[in-house]
Length: 171
Image (cartoon, rainbow, N blue to C red; front, top):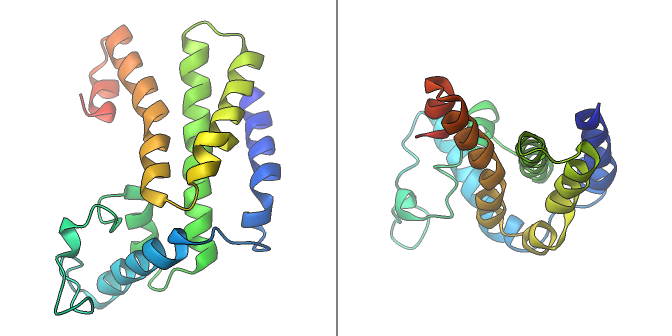
C-alpha cells in the first residue's frame, strides 16, 4: 500500500513534466538531449554510437561520461525510439527517480523503519534538494538514483546470501 502511495505522490509531484506542460531546462536539453538523440539515431541507422562525427572533426562519444551510452534506461529509450523527444527524456529521468524512491523505501523498511517514515524519506529523497537542484544534470541524477537501488540489492545479497541478489547488484 505504501508503494502505491509513493507512486501517487510521485505522479502528483512529477505531473508538470509528465503532462508536457514544462520541460527540464538548461543542460538537460542543451547537453544531454542531443547526446540521447545521437545515440538513438545511431541505433536506428545500425551505426556505432561510439564516434560522433558531428562534433568538431569527430569526437569519441564513448569517452564522454555524459553521453548516456552507459545509462541503461536511456539506452533502452534510444533503442526503442529513434527520435526521442524532450518529453521522453524527462519521463525516463522521472521514471528512474520513482524506481530510486521505491528502492530507498524498500531498503529502509528492510532496516526496520516504520513504513510511514520510509515513505516520507523516499519522497524527500526523490523530490528534495539533492534531486531537485540537480534535475537538469541528468548524469548526476542518474548516479544519485542508482544509490538506493545498489543499497537494497547489495544489502539483500549480503543478508540473504543470495547469488541472484548478488548478480543483480553486480557483486
